[in-house]
Image (cartoon, rainbow, N blue to C red; front, side):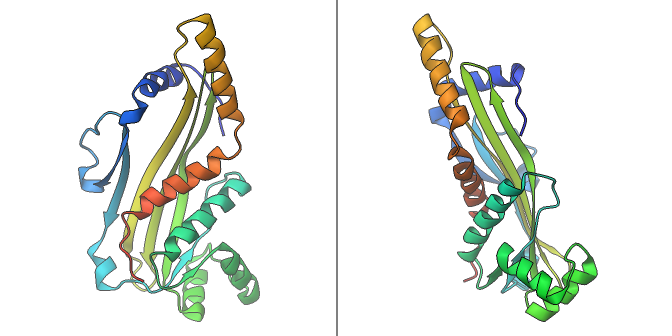
Length: 219
């Protein structure tokens, strides 16, 4: 995570004043170049025709290729698996995947390893993910956090991308100091937000939940 102030914090302070107006919209990749409404929470996605032509009945949740904190990576994988369970007939989450990798002596980082894994487990769908943004900003009277994910589901037989989506979530606390009293109050709120350990897990689940709204249910 990174800690920084500056112009980004100032722009987020302005956003804080209008925070109640935020909505969530799902936008296809074709429409993503259009200007988003102010303060829009946008989920960008693509659902290919191949998803309906040959939908997978099992999906493997793959490990991220990002070099991010292992605790955060586990948190994200677990959240993805929970939401994927509500959409697919069968999934192989991180714990089962790791166990099978050990037992079968398979390296899932290679195409050959994925082919062998899919054939043995009869699980032909693979869901890859990566963190596109992880930040933590703190500037005395204002604190914000953001996390963004991109996911991609492929079919092993055709290697076709069946579905992809991305989203960035952001939360903040503090305020615009207008008096000595408001400075102290905003500083207290910002510090409390910055030190709250429950915010990140909640944000991860927010991102994953909003992303999975764009995936049709196959159960």
